[in-house]
Length: 66
Image 1 (tube, rainbow, N blue to C red):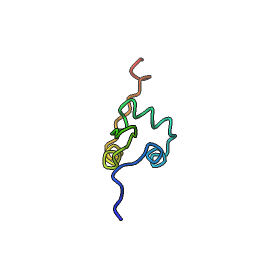
Image 2 (image 1 turned 90 degrees about the vertical axis):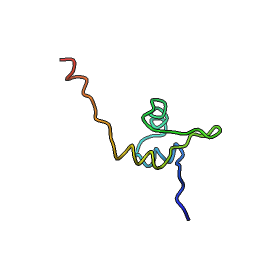
Image 3 (image 1 turned 45 degrees about the horizontal axis):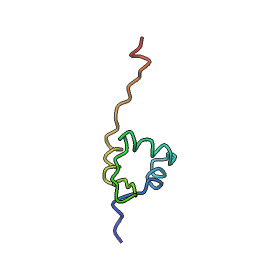
């Protein structure tokens, strides 16, 4: 049996170890890639893996303000 190409928002949240609401928030900001099919939001598995392999560097804003 082949692995599905996409994850639901709930499945992606579980894989990432975050809550569903936070996952929706990150989708809205574009941090988590998503495709919309009908009314469903689906996270492409390959895009999720790529996002995890290439994490963005965090910017410490408190250091920049001093």
